[in-house]
Image (cartoon, rainbow, N blue to C red; front, side):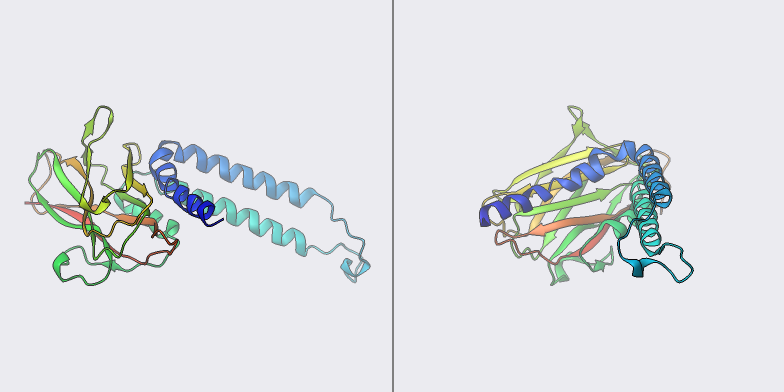
Length: 261
């Protein structure tokens, strides 16, 4: 039973790759479909007659109780709203909109560390990027995603959103990336979607990786018309972080920023 639970938790690490990287280009159509379906469900529930064998469900004026309809309509409307908000986070393609999606998608409360914080002084388990400097037209700018004070993890799901003005460096039709020392013996997977400007990482394994350092590095090209002093944000999100004992880890987040010099 415990092994089955571990497998289930491991599979959850693949969800962010599907939700953020795999389906981003269809976000607009999915949003419309979800909203239409929810509205149709609401209309169907509103038109459907209320059946009850309990005489007490009748109101004093003889009309059927409408509480069930009201609750159903509210649930369907909220579902449509949630689906639209989640999908619309990738419809614009800007890092700012993705940052809003992060807040909606994150299920565990995290602390966001200021982007210019010195990683050497951080004492809590922290995942993120920090500040990177680059020049206009620079290519293959390395963006390392690091784990500071790693308490030991097996299953993970991490996403990084990059500004639409930046270009993700590709290799053999996939994002160019390297795994770092923090992955250890874990099996890692990276998946990118240039349509919604997202790169995601997931891992699983049979033992915890306890090394601090770089989890993975990806690469970006800077536009030639970038201005000195301009900054590009790199929001970071963690969907899940578990150790081998299926304990969910609490980690702080330090997002990234590329400053043009």
